[in-house]
Image (cartoon, rainbow, N blue to C red):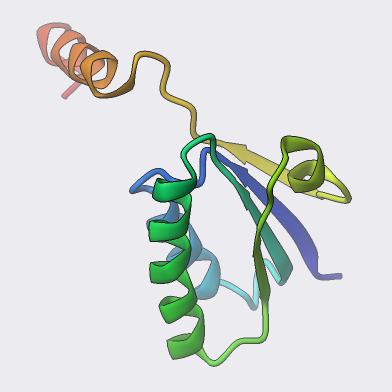
Length: 105
């Protein structure tokens, strides 16, 4: 059975990487559709544009929709991926620095 996936925080630069992996593994994990949501419409539209090109190149007929609300994005989802960064880039830099200081990177 094909799955419906919601990606919350879809304006992340990691989203196209995730979608690319989905497209490369459809035999093991069939996908019917992907709903996207992000608080930054600009970022979401940028990643959506890129992912639609990936989808077209793959030749698959997976639906990909940018949702205007969190509720719509979650409706009917079999799986939900969250990519939320609190504190934006400054917080991400601190996370990376902390990981380096603790020898995790």
